[in-house]
Length: 169
Image 1 (cartoon, rainbow, N blue to C red):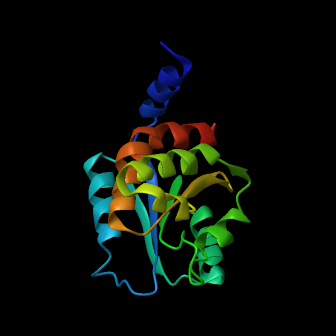
Image 2 (image 1 turned 90 degrees about the vertical axis):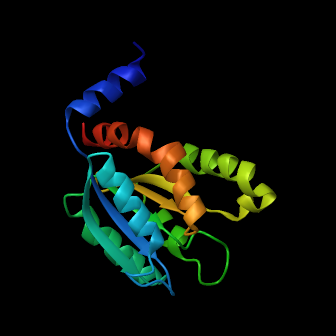
């Protein structure tokens, strides 16, 4: 058994992962937040726990405030969606990247590669990122439902227990 497989087996023994969902949007409401609904269904369907949910505007001070609030709580992973593009209103990446203590550049690289297969060269506009802050895994994806689904299905779901275990050991 590879060390990665061993780590995943040990991580699975720790039980459900506690995950926070943060949607960053100037237009969505709790009722229209399809990303949070999708993630909640996937997380709970896999036997894990949605420990918190926040819907905030794409304002740097709100992003940092919710990051600090949730990092102080019980969540092991904090999933941000939205605000990763390059428009003037896209501030999530900038707010988060300055706080990450360790980065996981492979997340953004692989996400953009997978996204390229779906949408072509426009994938380069994504500033999806991941890293560690205050002992929590932080993952930030674009806010399009297809991007959230891609990140969940191809990257996050298969590694979340391993990520939570690694950062907590």
